[in-house]
Image 1 (spheres, rainbow, N blue to C red):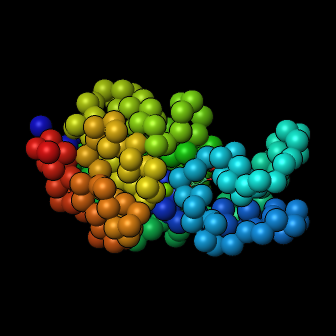
Image 2 (cartoon, rainbow, N blue to C red; image 1 turned 135 degrees about the vertical axis):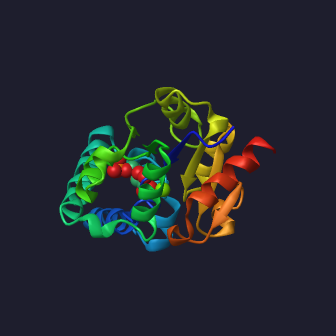
Length: 220
Ligand code: BG6
Ligand code: MG
């Protein structure tokens, strides 16, 4: 079976919003007197907003109303960052890859933990190009559960084995493998090494790379 569809993670694959998340969490934590640094931010890659805050708080106890208010404030800060996002924030190699998929007639979707996914894609000027957008509201169980990717494959009417997921997070690679998808990992081997094919950055992505992951998944 040739590759039928592609599912892209958003943050860290189509664009690098990690800095925006970092600045927003940092501002919130500075105000609350909670230590927060870039190493901690790395641990939040691919994690939902509430799960991220739980990790940041660690042993610190806050009541539910405070917890919810912190999430709202963090998202307001993140929206300030998003307002500055333009198509120039697409990562290297992504525009050419989307063009190549269009030329090959292969549909593609987004599978993101972010509830801001549609907003980010609109700011990047690519929202309309996606056959489906799965985001932080699509399923109940977050990555590393395979549910989000499976729901997207279902919506696209393709089998997981005919579909390739592109991910930059450990939890995302695990979710895609659990679902039976071909997987391309973007980033260091220590983070995404379990994927069928690993590339160091998005500039190395191509139709050939995606097809190789699809072959390795089907003949594994
Ligand atoms: C993921 C990011 O894509 O989305 C995480 O990698 C982020 O860092 C998560 O926490 C949730 O995003 P949002 O936009 O719903 O706060
Ligand atoms: Mg990501």
